[in-house]
Length: 305
Length: 245
Image (tube, rainbow over all chains, first blue to last red; front, side, top):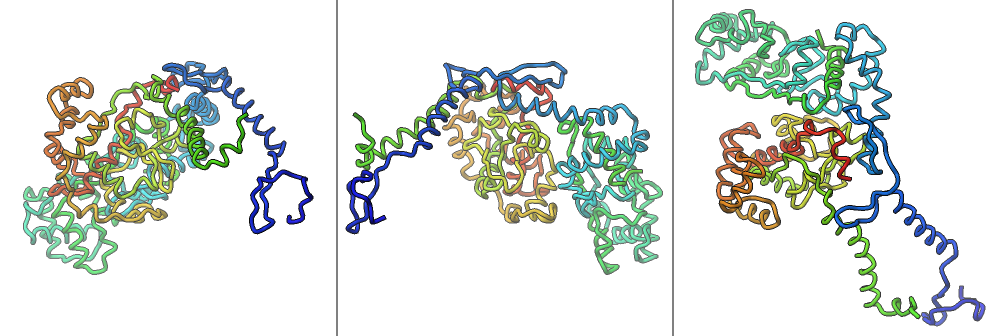
């Protein structure tokens, strides 16, 4: 660069380090032309799309978008992202429509036999379940002991039929068990815990379990009111089946020692439960999405019965 | 004739003219929004946060939740399907500052309200990985053990009021709020009763699962549970808000 031909280009006149000079060339042509093109482009853009504020409104441009709303009315609007969204939702809804129409039209027992529809439920349900249900029930529906029930097993607090699952999703649930710490003494609660453990074949003290059995079915504790005389729970109120080996609130299988298992059950009896809240999805999801999720939980995850 | 050289060799002038050129962009794009009638949609249900929710929002900001979570669902199909109805300008009209954001390390939270139970929110804030194994969100266990500081509650609401959030400091403002938000909501916006209302909402809501105290967890969960729930979209046609753009 130091061997400049004299007068070949202009320089700014600045000189550093004896011979280091700054060129003062005009901008390259491709650059200036590109710049003028952007100006032309912007003027065209103003005419097509919403652009300039005018008073309390703005120029809306010539471009139009036609879409169909949920009421089935065809509407035309100037170009904007919200109308564009409506149009895009239309286009994709069109592809899923045959499946959703069939899903809504057919009763659950017919859906269960329609493999094509079940395939659709499995693929569309995976996304819906992942977005909405998996945070609590986990991605495979396995649930979380102490918090959220497993959806893949045969144990259902509120019932595992299609109708019951749909009801749970639509209206939500709220688990409740009164605390017994103030009602029963420690010995009584220990006896009850032993009885509850004996129901599902967990290690327990037979003598204490016998006393617990008596208490369970007595008016003093009245456990049978909610859990039933057979201790199998009642779907109407969501009381747990105590006779199976599935535990939600007291994590009995995780505890090694017999004493620890008793303590785990005692804790639930003492403090009761005011949790197990399933949010209401009726307002957030559409009826066809709820029906799809019902089939997904019942058949794809396979927990329904 | 005007020559570039004149600007480029006067650094002070260059600075002034550069700033002028840049502010044209801002003025043209931003200033008109304050005068266009349709900028903020006409919609029912949007109200200022209750004192407890407002304190929750302060904690949201203090903990830097906004660094990873946006609160704006854009009008795109994928966002609508995942998060729900796109956000309206009206829904953040009482937010100072707004929490829209564009950085999503975590999911958008604009409609997280009522999506999960209080119990989930608490367990998740205590240890996110326990609920979402693949999560990279840090833990916030101190929220559950730190009592909520309400000593400066009135000052905080007065500051919000000063920038235009209609918390009421006198009878006339209270009556205006009754008209605009209904009696029940207007009660919650009274600055003089803020302390009492905050305690009551925390007790009734039992957000952190412990009624004996009011913790920062109570406030944050109360705030999260109201996000995006104020507007009842079932009252509007699904294309109602197209007309505002």
